[in-house]
Image (cartoon, rainbow, N blue to C red; front, side, top):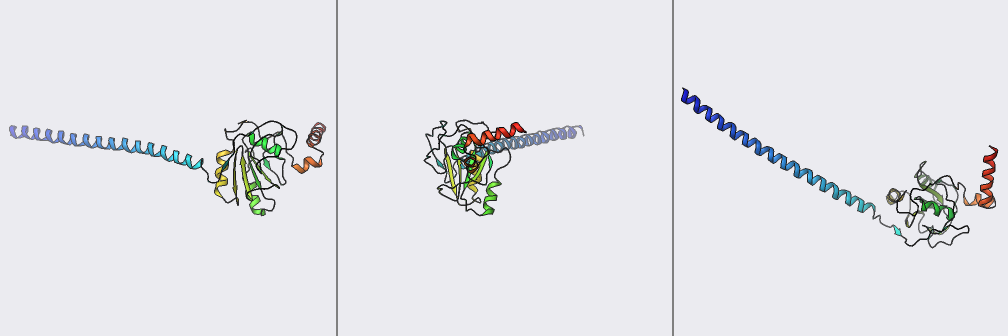
Length: 226
């Protein structure tokens, strides 16, 4: 009886050791598999993020313009691009926002220098499409929306400093991609500068008032009276 009991204990111990070895082996396999899977997820995630960044920065149809000057001027500028994507401009920038009439280019270009995206459209664009463009501006955003009476390569053109894309309608997904990439971009001469507190007037309003100095002095006088 004692021998059988001792033998049973040895067998039981051997079975337990074998079971423990099997469990340890299984845990190692699970651990190794988990580490490998995690590593693949990290590598895959980095690769996917890199791919998305590549796609984001390679929007089809975006034109790039180099060597833009950014001097302050008081007279109109004959820009090489229409609408302009940068260059010399007035010392006062156009406030970001929505305008029902064209704005002065030398003010809008200064806004581009601060990281704004200027969305211009054909004045004949259907009202529902104009509304869709205007909806791209939200208070505090660096977006400027206005009709443009000059020559344009398409009914809708979005311009950032040194970058431009032309689309047929607001429904083109590249317009939103362009906004996400270039609004408040750090790749501008004056990143982080304001897009408010300067010129809130359209080109026609400035002309009707007799020029920028006249309209600004009138605004100051009104503020003083208040």
